[in-house]
Length: 287
Image 1 (cartoon, rainbow, N blue to C red):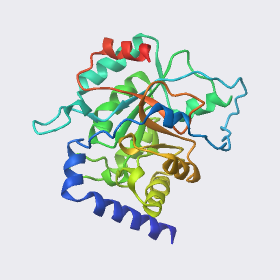
Image 2 (image 1 turned 30 degrees about the vertical axis):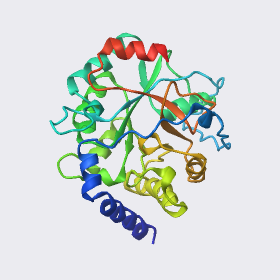
Image 3 (image 1 turned 90 degrees about the horizontal axis):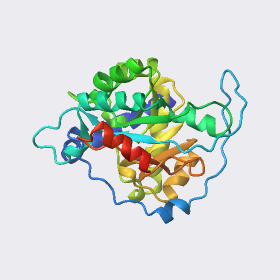
Image 4 (image 1 turned 45 degrees about the vertical axis):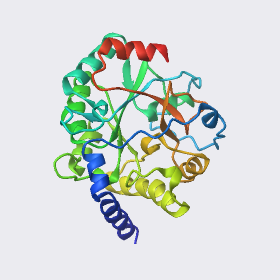
């Protein structure tokens, strides 16, 4: 029964996102950014405590409160002429230069899982941690981002949209995701079909949030501990659904550093297309 239900979710995801409008949006990374969430709304959210998972080799140390930069990438590649949102594309050469600049500046990539463990006294952090997130699940995550990070021995975080699996020509295939996991990447959920979660009904909200986690856990045998709000859209009901589904935290499109005090409204830094490495370092230093 669970397997049949998960297959039904996957078929529904493919069907819903297979419409011309959604296909056009995702094929060119053209989904428009949601209106920014007011900082007051983010601060008004009260998070419920969640159990702390104990790693295989227990680490006992002080619970760090270090704010951490979380970078947000979308498509790694060159935008086609018709792409209405070319700023969501970052070329492979530029990504390589940005990662090299981060390494020279003393940064070391970690996962959100590692940050969360450090915030709860269960793992150490390097002196200058940074989290590299890649939204949606495009072929360039495997063909470009993974080899670049592998040269530095760094992990990435894939916020995987279930409907993007096996998209002809540009979507990730399951075997690609498995190789990314073998290279140290963490897989987190970006829903089944990328709706504006603040506008859907309770039943679909639960399916998109909880169902996507169930699909990814069954497909890849990974915990899927974090969630990424599609287009950064959320409200109190969405955050409550994320908590109930068992996620430890969630990333937004609020600009800034991720902080321990706001696990379900973790801020990120958008990497815009064409942003020189020096400018990216300056942006990180200014937030």
